[in-house]
Length: 147
Image 1 (cartoon, rainbow, N blue to C red):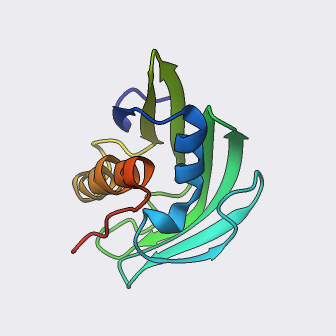
Image 2: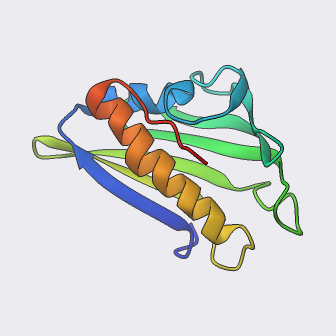
């Protein structure tokens, strides 16, 4: 893992299994259009947000209550010169029990400061993970961005 890759984490009172379930309910916390299964190991799904972002992910790791990894097979970002900056990156969710709480550590491996989309993409991930996904975990309802 590149130690410059974007990462963020938070803790919640919910169990690792509840966190795992919320991550896999992608439609509940990530705004946009989806096609395909977002829960089963080996499944592929596409994500589109207007004409700004399109990507295709494969669920390459899925360990209940512990870890989920999406490998980005392809993608196109309309707002950067190298449209396929996300291709061959990994979106990683590590779940760890910390006493009575559960920590979720999110890392987009390959999303580094050298990438043109770094600031825009980390702002988006910051909202989606730290606010929307966290809200889905803690309240049962994700938050929709107003961008």
